[in-house]
Amino acid sequence: MSNGYHVAVVGATGAVGQEMLNVLQRRRFPVSKITALASSRSVGKTVTFGETAVPVQELKADSFKGVQIALFSAGGSRSREFAPHAVKAGAVVIDNSSAFRMDKDVPLVVPEINPHAIKGHKGIIANPNCSTIAMVVPLNPLHRAFGVKRVNVCTYQAASGAGAAAMEELRQETRAVLDSKPYARKIFPQQYAFNLFPHNSAMDEQGYAEEEVKMIRETHKIMEAPQIRVNATCVRVPVLRAHSEALNIEFERDVSPEQAYQVLAKAPGVLVHENRAKNMWATPVDASGQDPVYVGRLRRDVSQPNTLDLWLVSDQLLKGAALNAVQIAELL
Image 1 (cartoon, helix red, strand yellow):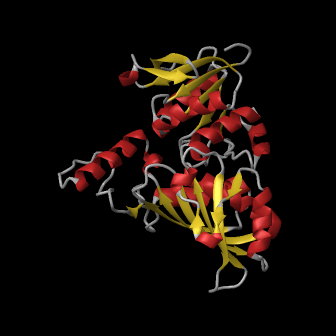
Image 2 (spheres, rainbow, N blue to C red):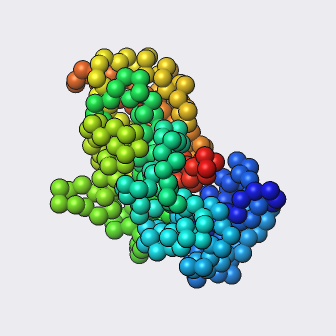
């Protein structure tokens, strides 16, 4: 590790933190030194960066001396507490939590869509919500080509969105249910194995989950298109990894599925993945461990004009989190 940047990964032992280390290595990001930071519980552990075992250090206010880029994925409260210390020490923070996303002074960046936004950063750049990223990567090129008036999205979100512990809880609960044994959940509010439920984030007075509100507000900010009407219904499904979404998109004029496919075939970060003859479409299993947002099943909405339906699947830990953060670092 020579001739590069001193990079810190905050939350290095978590699911996203581990993927950040993997993506930095896989994409050959120029790293001269890697610092792995986590809570005091993780001190004594090591994480892997390429061939190197990196000791985990406790996250403290003085952890950022010499750090140039700090990738945060340790939750909003940790980001609010420690990101200012990182900035003060001279680092640029790329934050994966919701702490700063809607701050008017913090760019909210998806590199395929608004790379220009990072120029205005004041030390912190926000990584959007995983469900939002998956949606806007194909939605933005369609908007640029045809003009999107409204999008109604239903998400089918994997356990990976709630972290490594949630993925393990789904595994354990599934075994328990199959063996007809009781299981004490710690992460999710109700049975997750062989079940699904509206997203477990906090509900507002209108009955919208926090996850749904994020998708609405973040889409407007990233695409710089506050006029697009966005509605979201987010659902937890018993899938280990990779989120799926069904989009119903109303355009300003008539758009054929063929025209939309032509745009998406050229769109950065998008992969058309389907086999119509065999009625096969992208699944979470296909997208797990893969970088692109998989799209397909484009069809006209027979209930109203100028409207298409679209199916997509995206690895929440990669494009939805770690990959997008590293791509932002590459822009820097």
